[in-house]
Image 1 (tube, protein in one colour):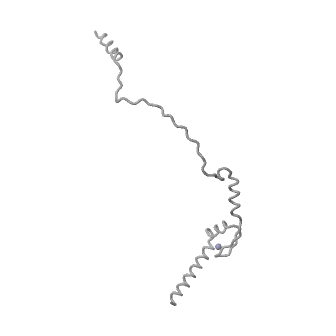
Image 2: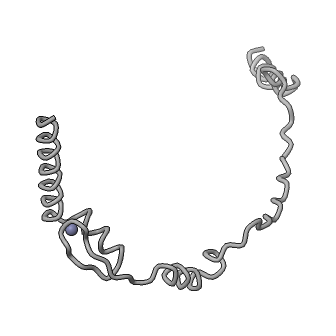
Image 3: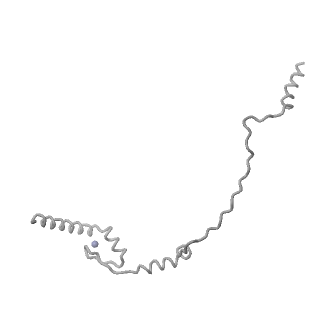
Length: 114
Ligand SMILES: [Zn+2]
């Protein structure tokens, strides 16, 4: 009898139909990605098409031009040099401050006279 019980306990779970637990899930359908449309170029870009020509034109339009600082009188070969000087030079900055102070004092004196 005990041997029969053991056989029944082993065979019964195999005979029962296996039921999945939980809610039924949708079968997965692989998504088909649409092919990307080829982009249309709206504008003509020299930079993108021919970078060498672009840089040649860029520097052709900005030729070297001698100029001098209006504050301290230094001369430069290009406008870029002048901009750099105005931005960085400590001496030029000091001269500008002194000029501004003088202008303030003069305007103050004019006000006092009036
Ligand atoms: Zn200067």
